[in-house]
Image (cartoon, rainbow, N blue to C red; front, side):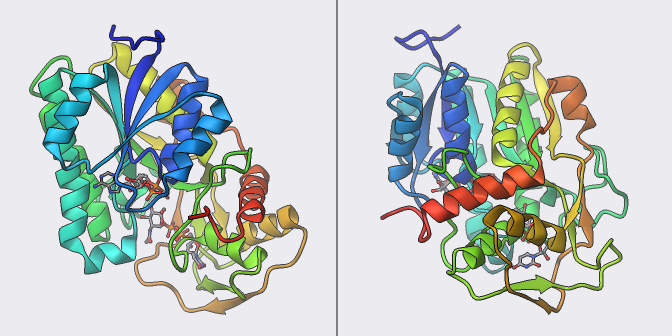
Length: 345
Ligand code: NAD
Ligand code: UD1
């Protein structure tokens, strides 16, 4: 077992300054790990690292750099005795992935390859990977289990599926390799302290940050993308999962990999679906006022409903999501109220 000076197991966290990575770093520290962050800050702020330290009372080691830089990774892995890596670093905007396919394939697949290569060279053969429900695409059957058909509907989803494939092929080369591909459904919410949350650049693409910006007065009204879907109220159904539950899923996966080599895929979702209007109503209860909205046309590429079957994660990892929609909205609102304009620059 490789331990650092303080006797804590160090874990390399690529993209650890981002939305999901930052909250996971805080949870890692609370659970006795020592995160070593690698981030190029292309979609985050250095101040996040200070906040994780403030929140946990632990200094956080952060190296600024690109996960595609193999020499940097070699150097980092030679200096820091890490036992595993969690790979969050990536590009995640579905719409943008169609207009920037080179960048998405380069960062999401090239970045994963680069990390795998360096980990293999260093003999650190344990990886938790940020995958997505986007690998399933337009599936007819709900809820989605890990063996549901995979047919990504956009370049982003293709890159996540390809990265999963690369991980499986590399893992097959050495019996020590243990990897978990975690397929996130719709992560929302913020750290309950209000110190860490989602801070999208420009106009938010996703529903929860958009609602939060309407609530705080940064946007006039939500546009609901279609109300003629075959769902409870005609609006799209998604499986929203609290970012802290998601972070706990990573801790559970890390523990599982300690004794279970091979590649394992898990859905991280709640198993419950909510419509756009249900989420809006829940947010109104959290913020205490009505949110303006209008009904617009369907958004290209959207599915009517996307809900996880999280049975495997419960049975194999002993993990399940515990936080409900009210808590997701309350925590998002606390974060947004405390940071109406996002993280200070
Ligand atoms: P984010 O953009 O907030 O975080 C990603 C972090 O990676 C950022 O801090 C960014 O600066 C960093 N980064 C990007 N490219 C890099 C590179 N080449 N080298 C080093 N660092 C780099 O995104 P997030 O919401 O925290 O998502 C994290 C991961 O989870 C991504 O891989 C994303 O595809 C995946 N995911 C996210 C969601 C979601 O809804 N947020 C859903 C499914 C999957
Ligand atoms: C999107 C991505 C998915 C990614 C996820 C998390 C697509 C097709 N899918 O999921 O791959 O993993 O984000 O980053 O983009 N909505 C509105 N108004 C808005 C925004 C959204 O009505 O302003 C609706 C959508 O139509 C959908 C629901 O809210 O029904 C959720 O949308 P969103 O938060 O963007 O997530 P997904 O589309 O599920």
